[in-house]
Image 1 (cartoon, rainbow, N blue to C red):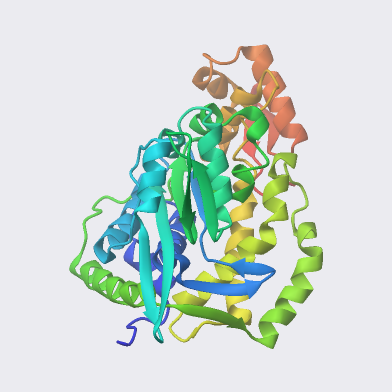
Image 2 (tube, rainbow, N blue to C red):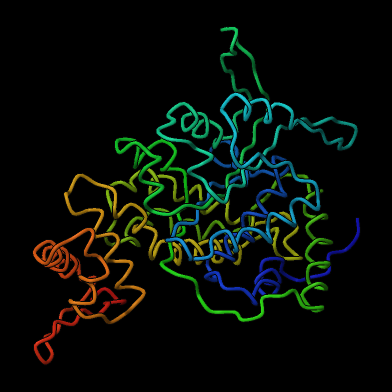
Length: 391
C-alpha cells in the first residue's frame, strides 16, 4: 500500500481550511466526521461488544455562523473518494432504500466481508429530519449501534432485513429550527442522546478573499491522497497498556468533569465513554504511525476535543422549554455573547418584537442568576457585560 504523505490528517485539514470564516471547532469536527465517514464499518474495536467509528455530530449556531461553509470542503473530499452519502432531503422509505443499496464488500485473506455503510451529510439537518418525525428518529437511534441485522416493515406490510449496518451523521442547524423539528419530550434521550452537538454563537473571523490558493490546492491533493488510503483501511484495533491506564483513570469519575449539566443531556452523558472510544479510533487513524493500536496520545486527543466541545454544548437546547421566556432568553444570550458589552436600551431595541421592558428585565435577572452576564450601572445607563468565564 502507498505511504501516507502527512503526519496527521486532522492537523493538515485545519491548515487547509484556515483561510475561511467558520469557528475552528466547526472545522475540526468536519475533519473528524470526514475520517469517520471514510472508515465506514471496516475497522472496529472489541470492547463491551464491538465499537465502530461512526458518529452523530451536529453543528449548532445562528444563521451566519458559517456552519455550511465549514461542512462543504469535507463533503467535497468525500465525494472525490466515492464515499456513499445520503441526499439532503429524503423520505424514510427512500433513505432505507439508499442504505440497502450501500452494501459493499472487502476480500481479506480469502474471506469476503460484507458491510452496509452510509453517511448522512446534511447542511440543513431539520430539513432532513422533517417535523416531529419520530419514526425516522427511532431508526437513526437504532442504526447508531451498528447492528449486525436490522429488520423493518415494508410498504406491503412484510418485513425485510439489512445486514451489517453502519450509519454516520454530520449535520447543521440553528437552535430555533432544532426546536421546531424535535418533539419536546424527545429531547434528552433517543436520538439526541447519541448526538455530539457543537455549539458556537458566531463565525470566528472575517476573510476578505476566501479563494483557494495554489498552496491550498497542494494541501487538498495531500489530503485526498491520504484519505483514499484511510478509506481502504480494514482491521481490528488493539489497545496499549498506556491507553488502558488513561481510560481506567478517567472513566470511573468522568461525570465529575461536567460540573453543571442540563438534565436533557443525560442520554449524552451516559454515552460519553462510547464517544471517547470512537474518537480515539479516529484520532489514531488521523496520525501516520497509528497502525490500528490505540495509545495514550489517541485517548488524550479524543478527550481534549470532547471537553472543548462540551464547554458550550449545553447551550444547544437553551431556547427549548416550557418557560414563557425560554425563546427570548436564548436569543438574548446570543446577542450578549456576540456584543460582549451592550446597553439595556440597545438590547431592548434589538429584541422589541419579542420583549417589552419588564420582560427584558426578567430575562436579564435570569441570566445574572445563571452567571451568564454582569449588570453595571453607568451614568444612568444599564450596561450588560458577557461573563465569558461564568464566574
